Image (cartoon, rainbow, N blue to C red):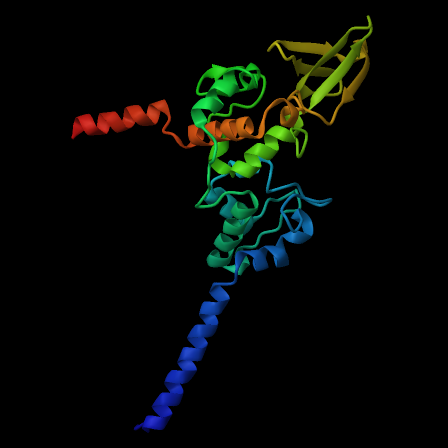
Length: 268
């Protein structure tokens, strides 16, 4: 069978249109996909709503790897109302996760304007962050270990967490106040609770256990133990320095990684 030149040109044009259409479907932007499939529950900015939690600010979400997030988006989570979106295709799932990272403030280019050395001095000194937080084995342990905290956040997000500590708190970071039957007032972070017993960790690091039958009241607050006045007690420059310290520390190789690198060089 012979094809005329005109017929061949038409066939090639049709194939080109089809290929372009498929390419366009595969490159749908992450923000459009998020808006169409995720925003109704998680909010247009990812900060959560009545149906689903924040995926832009919660550390437990931010710390997940891209592969973990893609698995959740693709397969869903049974029992909590998170549907599976694997039917959209792998490129679309990856695009959604990439967009979620932008909502979290994580991007390829982040400008750090502070001085990390001054930030370290502030962290362990004037700002007293190390009273509760630890970095690379130094500091307190009642609050989260910040050794890798800044690795997944933008400078703006880290700064916001410092000056707005009660925003988007996770349950284990909220202060609980109890009054005992002998009128003692004790505050601490909730570590476990059931119908009969409550377990707290106080600011000095002690773990305390109380029988609810011996308590006058238990109040779950909406604030953390972190001071809420850093914007007043630290200058803008000092805040930038602390932020810089947390981000550069998180991106630096861990001691075990440095040792591993040295061993490889020695082997060479």
